[in-house]
Length: 440
Picture 1: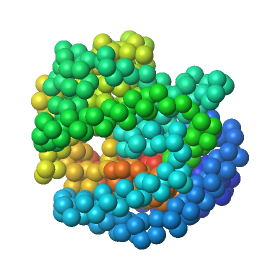
Picture 2: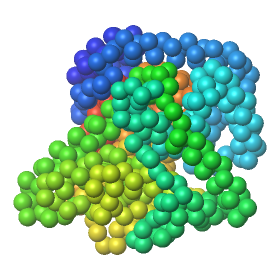
Picture 3: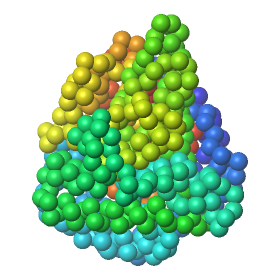
């Protein structure tokens, strides 16, 4: 069942034994697990994948040598934070202060080892959705007027920060400029006072402006096009779009008089996957309602910009709301749905940031609000993935990603009230992610 994965990993000299063993064990237990067949354009140049893999391994070793004790303390803090998160326990403030001090030192080392001056604008986006959108568009980035579509590292996103405003139907940020919506979210959702919210906005929009105009260098393009994490992100998107499109076809066939469909993306980021599904649904004669939920107004503005580019902006409604309260309870989905049921629910970029308690709360809430023939699609980065140390080491991705075994994903779904047998898993071709598709 996992021969595709084995073949690819042998080609790239990536140990795949543990992940293969996971898949084989789950098949023996009766779970449905497949390996995706999506082949990214990067696979046309396997020598580049192998070269970047080796380069990042080498740079990672250099980073660890230079980081020394600072890295050890930060990784210890990260481990404590991960353990506390799994139990739903907030980290004491002292650990947060330690992390900030150590991160500041580590960031300067990362800048020297991995990022030159033209690459830092991308890295400063860190966990923001726009950094992931760059990876999706990596093959279309243009270097020095060469082949490609996009001249800056923001890819297809040419968001006009100063002129963008949310529409009158965009919930709590309706009618606001992007900057005002950002300041509002910091006060309303994060509890910050006006002074701190303004300070955060100045920093975020300065970094964003630089990022949106930063040129693309060849070595930057190589990394975002060929590293293992990039392969995983693009394959994840394509596998999700394909699986949902297949299910939509089945829903249409089963109910020939279907005229509309509700699609919900939670922690949507730029929402490219669900927007592609919605455009395909509209092409099939079904009117989509696209509900996008995120805490970050910049991500929501970017999603609206992509929807506009795709010609489906009239079908989009956005909600800038906190995804979970301090007790780990998810947003009031019933209030947002206002009597509607969800046909397709997608949050494939969210679960790896959630401790188990919150993961289960979200799953049970979404499952409860699915239509009888609905589909819930989630995902998680694999514990036994290739080059796992890169993300929190050399890359310094933040916030913390909780990598899980595939069986943990199945168990969390079942503990959330999703019946065993309703969920199937698909490991991306590169081995980085596992996607879970649950059918009601």
